[in-house]
View 1 (cartoon, rainbow, N blue to C red):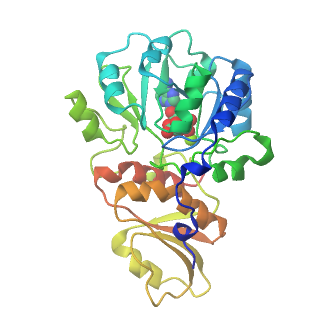
View 2 (view 1 turned 90 degrees about the vertical axis):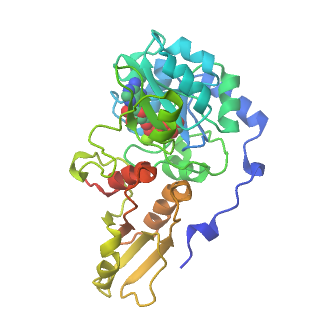
View 3 (view 1 turned 180 degrees about the vertical axis):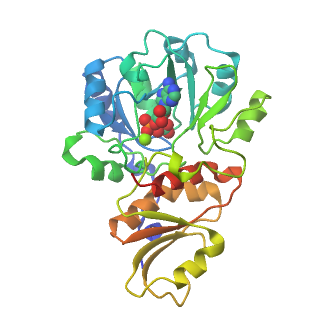
Length: 338
Ligand code: TXA
Ligand code: MG
C-alpha cells in the first residue's frame, strides 16, 4: 500500500507563490474578495477583517455559523493595540516570545473588531503567523485579515494548497501556495481577557512553554486534566472525515485487528508497523512516534485514508502526555459523530 509519506513532494520554496501573486492577492483582499493563504499551522481562508461584506462571503463559502468568532491575522506586534484594549503585560510578553508563531491571543476587543469578527463577544482572537507567504501578504495588505481554517465547516483543516482546492474547487479563485504547513494543527488559543490565563484550544505550543515565559500558572481547557481528555460525548464533531473514525487504545489495538472480519476494509493510522497476518484489507499509514512529526502529517494522513473510502478509519490512540494534547484533541473531535 502506498503511504502519503512516499507520495508527498518535498517541501520546497519553489512551489511558494511569487511576490507578484502575493501582491495581487493583497489587492483582492482590499477589494473585498476572499484569498486562501498558507500558515505554519494550517491554511487560512482570508477576508478583510474590517469589511462586513467580505466577512459575509467568508461565512457563506465556509458554511459556518455566523456566531462563531474568527481569528484576526496581523503582521506585527504593535498592531494588536489597534484591535484590543486593556492589553495586559502578558500579551506583550507572549507576543515577543512566540510571534510570529502558532499562538492566538484572546483579548478585550477594540471598536475595530466588529461583531462579524468576534461573533458578538467582547473579545477578539489575534495571531501573527510564522509563514513567509502569510507575513508578506499581511504586510502588503496592511490591516487585519480574518481567517478561519480554509476548509468547509466540519471538515478537516487543510495543510496544503491542494487540500484547499479539494474543498472549494472553482468557488475560490485565489489560493496562495506555501507548501506543507510545518506545524500541522491549529494554533494554541490563549485567553488573556479574564483574571486567570487559560488555554482555550490546545496546539503544538504547549502549556509548559507558556508558563515558563509568563512565570505563572496557565489553565488547560475546561474539562482537560493532565492525563485525560474530555469525554468524547462533550466534544463537538468538528474535524471529521467522511469515513467514521474509531479511536482504539494501544493496549487493545492488536486484538482489535485480529477480530476484524476478512471482508473488512479499514484505514489504519498507527504508530506501529503493519502486522504480517492481518485478516481484513487495510490501508496502513505508519505514523510518527514523536508528537511534532505526528502533528505535521496528521491531516494529510487522515485526508489520504478518507480519500480511499474505507468502511472506517481506525486510529491507534496516542500517549496521555501533555505533549500529545493537541493531537488527542483533534483525534477525539474527528472520532465524534453527530
Ligand atoms: O492556526 C489557526 O489558528 C488557524 C490559522 C488559519 O491561523 N485558524 C483557525 O481558525 O484555526 P478557525 O476559525 O478554524 O478556529 C478559530 C477558533 C475557533 O474555535 C473560535 O471559536 C476561536 O478560534 N476564537 C476566535 N476568536 C475567539 C474569541 N474572541 N474568543 C474565543 N475563541 C475565539
Ligand atoms: Mg477550523
